[in-house]
Structures are given as C-alpha cells and as structure tokens.
Image 1 (cartoon, rainbow, N blue to C red):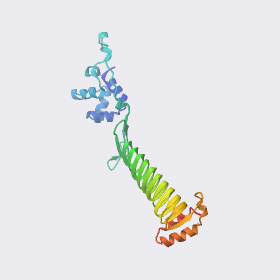
Image 2 (image 1 turned 90 degrees about the horizontal axis):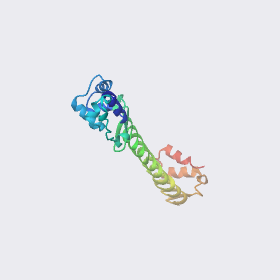
Image 3 (image 1 turned 90 degrees about the vertical axis):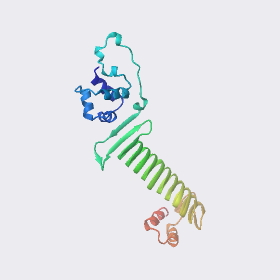
Length: 260
C-alpha cells in the first residue's frame, strides 16, 4: 500500500474528513486531497505531524509495502487511540452570522458544539442537544435556555424535567411562577404537594387561596381524592377577582377551567 492509500485509510479509521485533517495539520483541504490522490507529498514537518497523529513511524508511512523484502516484514505494534474511536465532529459549511448552521461534536471527554443547531457533549445554540445544553430550545441532562427539557431544566419561559425551574415549570420538583409537579412551588402551583404565594391546588395545598384534600391558607376549598369537580368554578372565580382584581384574565380562565 502506497502513502496516498495509507493516508486515506488512517484518516477514515479516525472518522476524520479531509477538512478535519487539514485543520489539525495546518494545511488546506485541497492539499490533503492532492496527497490522497498521489498528486503531491507533504513536506517533512507535515509528514512528521501525520506520523504522530496516526501513531506510526515515518518509515512505515512513506514506504511502499510492495517493495518491502521478506526480512523487513516484521509486525509493527498497533496503537489504538480510544478517543478517536469515540469522537465525531461535523461542521456545516453554511453559516449564519459566522456561526455554523449545524455543528455536531461528540465523543469521550469535553467536546463543545456551537451552532444554530448544536449537538454535543456541551451544546450551545438556538437549538441545543447535549449532556449540557445552553441556548434557545434545549434538550439534555442539564439544560439552560428559553425553553428547556432535561433532567435538570432551567428555562426562562418553559422548563420541563425531573427538576424544573422557570417562568412555567413542569417536573417532579417544579419551581416557577406557574409550577406543576409532584412538589410544586410558585405563585400559582398545582401538584401532589403544592405551595404558592397566591393560589395552590393539590393533594396538600398551602397558599393564600388553597384548594385540595388537605389545605392551609387564608381561603380554602376542600376536595375529596383530588376531585376538583367538587368545587364550583364560579365560586373560585369570584374569590380570585376579590383577592387579585388585576390578575391577567387568561390566567384566571386557565385556573377556572380545572373546575366544574
């Protein structure tokens, strides 16, 4: 196997594109293309960089295997770069304000993807998917963005996750202005254990207005087995208008819709 074929083979084994290899070695993609097509050969410093990158000797890299003598056919040690086996990167050529439209960067270790659409161990973008996701619409184990879905979700507008915090939060533990969850804490909350500064609804509800099986508040409505149909919506409406006369009507209507 000649140098051109060896170079192409080693590059593909590492999951690298010609563009990726060019960036690592410090040349243009066209230069790599010429090397792999046999039109030219790298300068010595680039050849050394290639041998170090692929963990092979210069002699092995440049020597044509067909010209080796029988005595020279000695098994060479095989080096396996575990990081390369679990690493992949793709960056689209199309950009938006200098940012790649799509950037995928995943593998073992700390790999950061930055793009309009970003997928990586750490992802930063308008749409982000990663173990840690930051940006607009985020999905991950830990997500921080305008809208977040994650094990631990922090969302300026909406957060959904095991633990969720945001303007509107939905989760096992939910913290927000509007909170829905097993444990819900906020201005308006609905959950098994519901705590609110304004209106709380749930199995146990504690708030200025509390509605549930077990309640604590200035004004209370008691249900049986969380059956909110036991409560008349009109009575709740009048109380809300009395206590919070300036509350936004869609919020009032949303709460009332739960009742008969």
